[in-house]
Length: 270
Image (cartoon, rainbow, N blue to C red; front, side, top):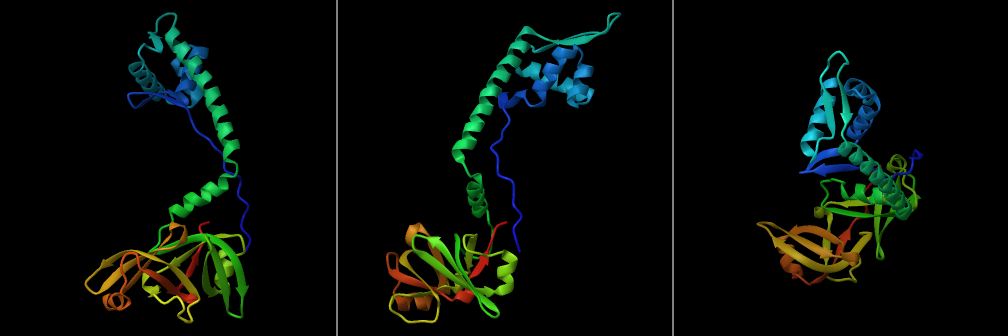
């Protein structure tokens, strides 16, 4: 399954001048003022910017209330008809806004050039907002995908020399479009994490992530043990209080987290 090519991200933003935490000038309001200057009537200006007459009146009232001097003056109808016009102060503020807007757009263009590939930033932000019930989430890049008859072995490089092995179905590999270089997550329930203090212990679990115990929280029956891995990553294990006592684990103890490859879930954030 091929992934659809998405258009590149762009740095955008709107400039507003605020007073007392409220919008004074910007967006449709600046367009409204310029249209009033051109047409001389609020009715036509409202049509030009796609506002109702009432909404245009409200916008003018809000700007006049927030500004230190009125921006728009209105004349009542008569034989010559009514109209609206910008004050000299209003014209100066419109000119100032357009000058600032030009500099604002140049700033956005420089930010775009300096940030380069925003897709990497986008991937990071999406990674930080992933929500799952699994206590352990390790973000990395797919290093290897080896398909078998039914299942596939997937190796996820999570950085700092750490790798996580997962055994998932070939169907899952296709559905998730897993391939080398793809960003992904290893999700591991804390109850699936076994602990050992003997680094030479020979076991069938493919994953052996060693570090130092950073904290222990003892409950009525089970204890939550957090292990600090390389790169300041943290792995959480839930073990029985009896196991905690037998292993003699405490803050600062060296130990290894042992996880079966079949207990590792792989997730992507499209």
